[in-house]
Length: 93
Image (cartoon, rainbow, N blue to C red; front, side, top):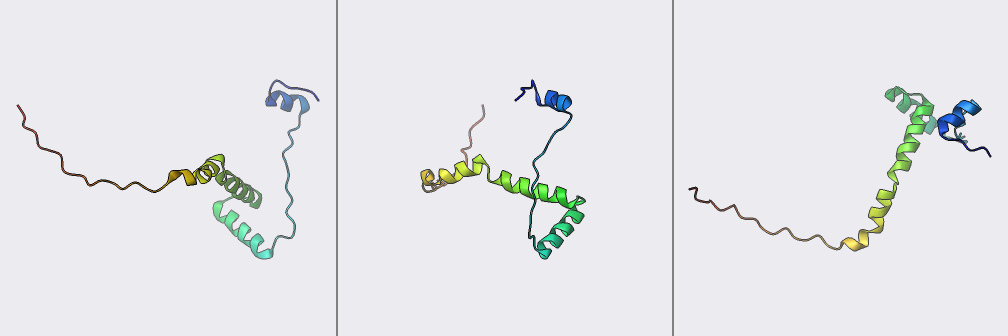
């Protein structure tokens, strides 16, 4: 396997840049039509719309949301907010 200094070096030397491909089979007609409508409303192709849906769904399940969920037991109860009074008026000299 050849090592490259950067991705761009690999791109220019190989002249190809492969992206992963996903094929979805047995997609219901109602889902297909909904995707088509959603893509049209957003001014995107169906492929771009599906990419956006997948990316936003995967990002939502980030390390941050996992960390928040895993530390839920450490939070305990909410502390009560003490009553506040108006500030004192001071005499100016």
